[in-house]
Length: 70
Image (cartoon, rainbow, N blue to C red):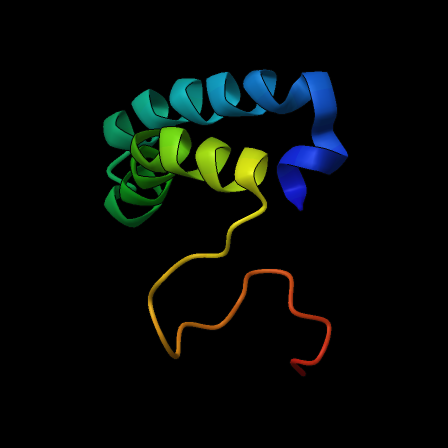
């Protein structure tokens, strides 16, 4: 859903995450660095799921943008 909303800016978002990883590492923000790195590493799968309309296959995993969560 996010890839579709970002459209042509989706790749810019990925690059931005990649750029944020380095300063987080330098500033000893390991948790943030891991999050950015995880997003960049997962990007090919995210794009694949977005282009096929598929959903992640992990059962019981909440959706990132699920409107039903509080």
